[in-house]
Amino acid sequence: EAQVTQNPRYLITVTGKKLTVTCSQNMNHEYMSWYRQDPGLGLRQIYYSMNVEVTDKGDVPEGYKVSRKEKRNFPLILESPSPNQTSLYFCASSRQGVDYNSPLHFGNGTRLTVT
Amino acid sequence: DAKTTQPTSMDCAEGRAANLPCNHSTISGNEYVYWYRQIHSQGPQYIIHGLKNNETNEMASLIITEDRKSSTLILPHATLRDTAVYYCIVRPRRMEYGNKLVFGAGTILRVKS
Image (tube, rainbow over all chains, first blue to last red; front, side, top):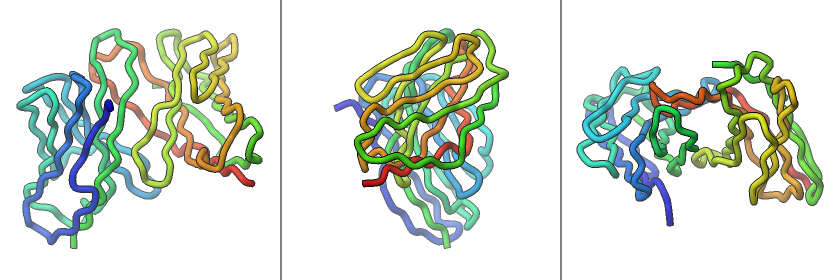
């Protein structure tokens, strides 16, 4: 089954303790991205990657890192989490081409709480 | 990117068609209309998209007006499981900066028995 898989689904951590949220897709998609969703602010893009070893900042990249060493994986890294990063996070993927018509496929989300 | 306007919420009786409107009066000729929905904190789910012609798939139909300034998503026989937030998104055809979607507030659709 074609899917985007995120782990973990729920995560509670303390301020400053480094964590990684994993994202993997099995559709051979070039494009992957991370969004966070907060009440009243909607979904906002954090980082994206157009292919292996190519990443770029989205709208709210502060406090996050990403890497794209393999096509299928796009982990989100919080080096020193803070309470304002408490949020619902989604990973997404799609095919990529300059003039390409391709829907984004989303994972089921990771609910992160930083205390 | 063109802005979209959707009603805040709508109700629909189970088994009836749900018609969700979207205004995108500033849409340009090379922008697509995409529809997604989100069921209670799950990941947004792709429904359908179109450029200027009406489109239909197994989930829904998309009707785009001739001037492309508005569209309607139609769920032909709504069920309780279609209760969700529905997002209408206008996205550029060219993806030099990646496949970014800008989500608005969407329409809360409540399907009632």
